Every structure is written in structure tokens, then in C-alpha cells.
Amino acid sequence: MRRRNSLSSRAPRATRTFVSLTGPAGNIGDALIRRETLAWSSGTSDELVAYVGDAPDVWLTQLGLPNDAIVLRSKKSVPRWLWFILTAPRHPVLVFEAGEIPLDRGNGLRELVFLAETIIVRLKRGVVVRPPRGIRAPSQPALSIHRLAARLSQVTLWRDATTLATARTGRLAPDIGFSAGVRPGRAWNERTELLVSLRGTRPLPDAEWVRAVRESAERAGLSIRTVVQVREDEDRARELAELLGGEFEAWGQTDPLEQEERLRQRYDAARLVISDRMHVLVLAALSGAVPIELVPQPTGKITKAFAAIGLDGVSFDATTTAPVRLREVLDATPERAAEVAERVRAAEASLTGIQQQIRAGIRRTRA
Image (cartoon, rainbow, N blue to C red):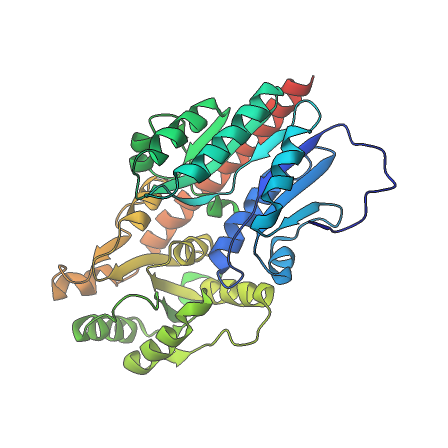
């Protein structure tokens, strides 16, 4: 356990909020959605308890954890986390982390723990919040346990319609990443770049894909730049820059917060951003760029999350899309950029309203 400031000299606090904020420091998208989850949690109680798993110190800085938060580190602190919940004063708040939930085989025990946490908080007449999430690889018994815990929570949100149908409870909401702030970016005629950021763990796109991207940039008078939002993708970005004849921008030793701001400035100046990383495209859209997933056999995650905010035509399968169509989808237009901007503004407003509703519900519970 780590306390950012000692609390030993203080009197016991009246209320307590628990928030889970685990994640890899080398993934700016994960840091982004955990930071927004923290924003939903901050100020809801007198005391904040955050579980960050095995994350390094830089992760705490990325998230902006307040100095007076109680921070629990590593899996060895899970019993202490549960003890804090069990001994919390009445009306605690429990906020699960946003993101993707794996419910494949082997996750049943973990889901039982989360169910127990939910039941304890409800018995204490507290509030359980599940921010917008997606379910991956649902299997039994983990799925059934998760469904029960979700039904017992006052706020259960899903970031895509498929997950909502699988969960059979809760409601649809935009991915929490859309609350990271709409940026004005540059005017359309001042945007000079086409950005590419692809996962390093998937096969390279073929020669037809490379040709289509290069020709699209040439037609629009854009320069190509490959960028890195996840550290493990750095080698892939270097490879793509060579293939595309573009400029490679490494992450290197740059501080994660500085890298995040540098990326957002790049998105501010881009007309088109091509990626199979969902939160690359979320940040690109928030900056006014046109987001496109154009890769071999996309998973569907990006399609579903953007469909939830009313934005279709974001994802395409490079292996089945005809060459002529490849060039069409890569021709970004100011009209498409305006549509993207309208949808992300609405998503941001929706998430702001949800957060206000949650805070009002907590106040009513404690009244």
C-alpha cells in the first residue's frame, strides 16, 4: 500500500470512494480512459482509495492521482483492498475501471471477487458504478457471474450494442475516452498530414494497402507520418514509415504525458488518421481528424464503439475491400470531418450528463 500523504494524524473520514485504475504505462489510450474514470470518482467522497495493480510510479503521474489518495499496489494488496471495502463507513462508492473486460475461461474467480465487492457496497447502501466497457471472449461461468454483478450495480454502462446484448442489463453509452476533451485543431485547409499508427502484433498490410495510402496522401497533398501511442508498436511504426516513404516519429524516452500532448498536437494538424488502435482514433476524432481503421481483418471493436456514437463507415477490411474502394475510403473530406466533429461533441456532452447524474445519485443516497 502506498499513501501519497500520510493520513495517520487525521480523524476517520465520513465517506470513501474506491476506484480500480490498473493498466500498462506504455499505453496512452489505457491511461486516458483510466484518467477519465478517476475524474468520475474524484470528489465523490472524503477519501479516495485507488487500486493500481503492478503499475509503476509513472502511471500514477499519468493518471493525475491526487496526493491524498490511498494507493494500493500489486496483487498482494488485494486483501487489503477488500478489507477497506468491508470496513468502509456507510454509503461507499465503488467505481470499476473502464475498458475491455476479458470473460474467457479462467476469469470466473476474479468475477466472483468483483461480485463480492458489489454486494458488500450495496449492503452498505453505497453506489456501484461501471463506466462504459466492452466484453471480450465471454464464456461460462464468468459471464453469468458478471451479469449478476452488473444487475446489482446502480450504474452499468456499455460502449457498444453487442456488449449490451451480451450483458442483458445496463445501457449504451459512448466510450469514456470521448470525454477527454474536444480540441479545435487546425482549419481543414491548414491540415497537412496523414498519420498512421498500427499494432505491432498484427501482420503488415500488403503492397496494395501501401500503394493506396501513398496515393491518397499524394492526391491530397499531405505528408505521411507514423506515430506511436503504444510503446510496443514503435518498431511497426518505423517499418511503416519506410514502406510509405513517410516520417517516423518515435516515442523514445519522452515522458508519457509529453508524448500524449505531442500526439494530440499531431492529430490537431492531421486530415486523416489510420489506425487499428481504438483510442488512437478516438483522440484523432476529438482533434477534428477523420478516423479510419483500414487493416486486414479488423476485429469489429472499433466499428461497434463508433457506431454507438452514431458514426458509421470508420472501419474497413483491407483484404476484402477492392482497390478502387480503398482509395475512396481514404479520401477524407471536410464534410466527413464536420460529421465526425458533430458526433464526438454529442458523445462528450452525453458523458458529461452521465457523470452529473452519477454525482447527483450519490448525493441522494447520502442525503
